Image (cartoon, rainbow, N blue to C red; front, side):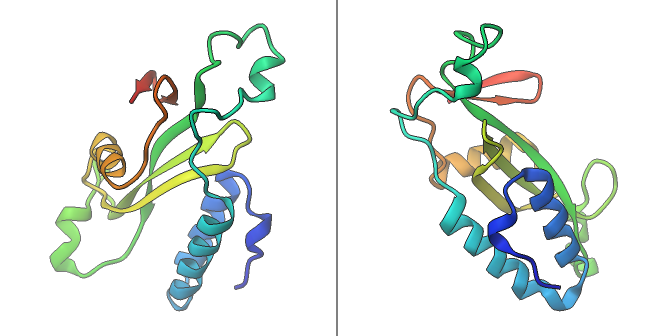
Amino acid sequence: MAIQYQSITTPVLFLKSIYLLISNKSAFHEVLDALLVLFKNNVKLPQSNTPIPGRILASRKYTPYFNDCLGALDGTHIEMRIPQALQSRYRNRKGTISQNILGVCNFDLRFVYIRAGWEGSAHDGRVLQDAQVSGFNTPKGKYWLGEFRVIRI
């Protein structure tokens, strides 16, 4: 199954495409190629001079409250099949075998960072901490929205 990498712009479409490819064992390398193309062409971390998104500036409901907000981040679980000996590490709180993947999107619904590979048993906070050590930097004075809270970094 081939997908057009340039057409994947929203998180939902991206995750659906990846799920379809992963569910087909023979497409493993195609998934990796897609991720590399997406990363190189679309994933760019914001800088301290990143302008305030138009959606924020255009609404009195959002400005000035979200002027320093860069977007949102959240973890998601992608089910997987692995050898029996490794399954306990990848078993998530719902009992399924999965990877915990951190996705970070800006207000244009474009990924600016993806951190994959963590065991399903890993907490979202641990994955975020690893991402920070591995190059995911938030400019000083800026922040990301997370589940039910604002995460200042």
